[in-house]
Picture 1: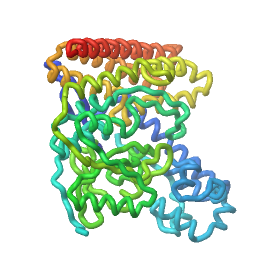
Picture 2 (picture 1 turned 180 degrees about the vertical axis):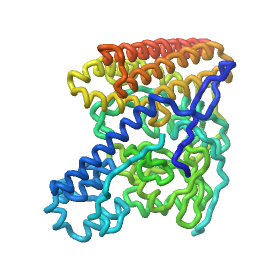
Picture 3 (picture 1 turned 30 degrees about the horizontal axis):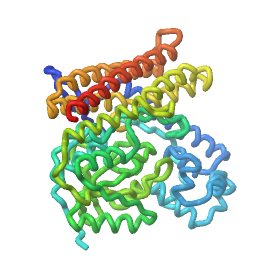
Picture 4 (picture 1 turned 120 degrees about the horizontal axis):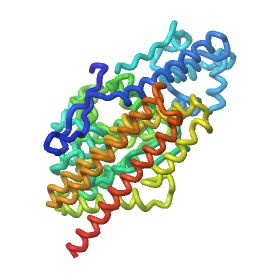
Length: 128
Length: 344
């Protein structure tokens, strides 16, 4: 699969009949989409900074990168919110049990060790 | 259990997942129904502004009816019975899916949009209202007819599990469905008229102020106050989300208007009712107004708006859309009533 998704839409042909035609994409949608993606990227970058500054755990970065909120993340790993919130702090993260680490790693599809590793930077490049 | 199974399934690309799935599934069971027809008979067109449901931490605007409703209504009206199942346990959900596939029945699944690997990254959001049909498997890979895509796609078992058990608002809980019984005896014109009647009821006569034509007006009033109430940045985000919802999710609000207009046209052909063609043209014009609204909104998002009061300008555009839809659905209601009288 390529990065581009070729969509179809309903359009009126020259005789005024509706036909299903390939959509060429159009600007308002692209603007709205790229605005949304910039927002996601900014949030991820801000999270990265906070983790580097020692204000939050790497988990906080992964969560933000995957556009999740604490309640959503808690639902995914099947833990209480307060527990996840604790794991989002560096202190709580350090004390996390291996079983819990495994759950997060499975969710984000990285190895348990890679959970600690942070990328240099984040570029979420939507292809429009 | 067979590890390889491929049910012959006719994949047709649609512009919206649920109506696409509906038309593809029913087609498989011998009904001839286009996507637009499924959308119309299933009463797909809708509007609701739901500020208390958050997607991406921003308010949700729905331009179509709730998930599953198109499927349910369209199949009922077309003389089919759907069997729905939800699961608590992913393993059982997958076993049941495999069992159905082995029986040779294609299965529809409701999934989240974030975990499907064949989605381009740019389209991945936590939005749990996607529909697709699984029509076979090869070992651990499932063969999927996803109506949004031009060709059938393949998805690994572990990703499909994740997508079927996506969490968050409106979680699918592994929901799957198949056509359990289909009879070919049904009155197509009754199905069409029933679909139109239901839509009029919900667009014009809802008790809730955030639904239907009233909902559009409500949103117009709210939108005007966004910059003052939420601050410039947050207002922009909300606006961006609104436009994204309108133009992207599913087929987008304006897209739904055009699809419904296509349905009216097809219905007009089948019922030999030129009046429906006229109304279809009017709805196309309303769809264009929605697009105008999107263009103006996107301009603000980009910081390119000229007028000094951009939001009130937008609000008046939206109010025009509301007026247009009001006209369209009132004429439709009138039409249905007249046809009913003739038939009696």
